[in-house]
Length: 164
Image (cartoon, rainbow, N blue to C red):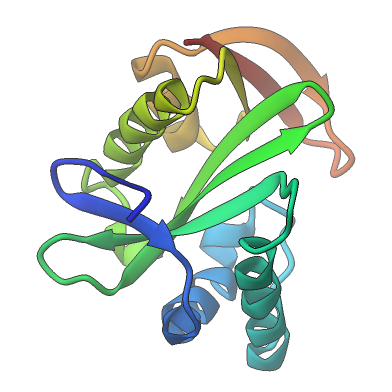
């Protein structure tokens, strides 16, 4: 276990997560604010194996973890902690059937506490402005809007920062 919240457990991904991972990653509603691309089962299996293999790399800066509920510990989503240049970026994604249950806000709070425990000083989050739910989660968790720009997909996107 990496960390837990009141209702959720964050742990390393395992191959047994493939079915849920594929279901989440192939859902256009989930992916429309990410990259809009959906892949095949075979491509998702390869992607999942690659994410799992990263756990063993020295100096790994790309951590994607599984989110499961404490009630029924099967895969419901992912959280990300990615270090790019000088920034530590967080992200989260859930199977659509788990939207609007408060899990996004709960996992964001848990991720903030975890980042503080591992001595990060500042984290960033990028969100497409049309993704109103994620904007609301970041603002509810006291992230500060620091930049707005047009991304490569021609969407308005915002950068938020949280100082730990």
